[in-house]
Image 1 (tube, helix red, strand yellow):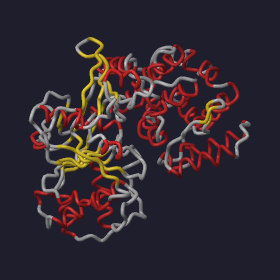
Image 2 (image 1 turned 180 degrees about the horizontal axis):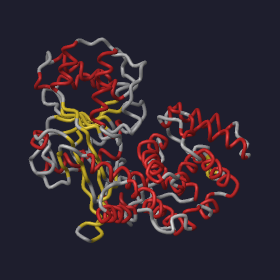
Image 3 (image 1 turned 60 degrees about the vertical axis):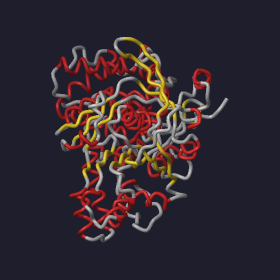
Length: 494
């Protein structure tokens, strides 16, 4: 059986490289790269994507071996019917490894047709790292790499205002475009770059806030054998996503013309303000993902669909959304109820195996962005702790012990976070006193949460009790003892 390359695909169309993409992962390949592919099919965009990889190991080599091609399976409910369909996506031209080919990366700045920059570097990716320098090859942070690239562009075209970029950061943080722009300018000042460059960054580049929504489980490891037989070729980059997609771009009207996805019939919207879209999506959909992950995984489940169809977990997830997340939102009851119902139906998608272990990557920053604001809002509005959310926080702390029974959990997070949890758990004998100390130290760490969570009334004690219960009885018994599942909210506060 042959490997997927251009020899197998009846498509010799060549497009100019118009997009530089930071991130080679499944999500962007099933989301923005797919959108560009769809626009190309209708002769609306006529451009392709160059993806860059910041680590020495990754998928860039495979991307190049497959001539940028990969198969996307879209599976879910379409026109009221379950549908599974697949297509070879041809919008990616090549990949660049920044560690080995930094010069090739900078050379992209000389391309006059390059117009868009897209990124998805996780919630922890848009950060300023003081050790980054302009001469590094590459810089450690994504904004540092971007600033160096923008400076190269500025120099090559001598500050030509028509050679700026439209920038779509897809990281799930509030005002992601605004924050990325702020850090780029911080690097420019820190590196003592000329005022003309700073003005060019501000005036010639459009940093758009964005909101992305599509569940992308990624590589179908459980069904790849069957899919390979169906396809008739070997594809090491197969990616699976749901049918639903939403891309909201907060930007000027001209973005619609240059990125005509809406004209192509895609669920893409260029708007003046995306805050209402974001609030519902982050708090309910992403919030539910983050809420359930440590609880369901320690319970012994592995996928989102298992978590929302297993009785006790289903009750926990649905009750917490209904009684603790929705009450903090100011939309109409009908709107929130419908949105929540749609989200839960997407979670139950029979085609999608969305692994909790994938959602668990960088869980601390995800909890901070997706769940912590709801916890704080609930306390502020109702004067008491949201017990389901607090239980999730407790489970998250126990999850970072790195064990599910005798099974090792492959924790993936930044080095500071992993070192902290490893040190604290290695010194904890799981007595109530030791767990109390561990919880207090974790909640106090403002590097993790942005504030000292011990200052929230009764939170430290509640989390300690939950962690002790999980440690002593296991997740199943701990869930059964959750107060709100025994009628803490006899009538929904919502």
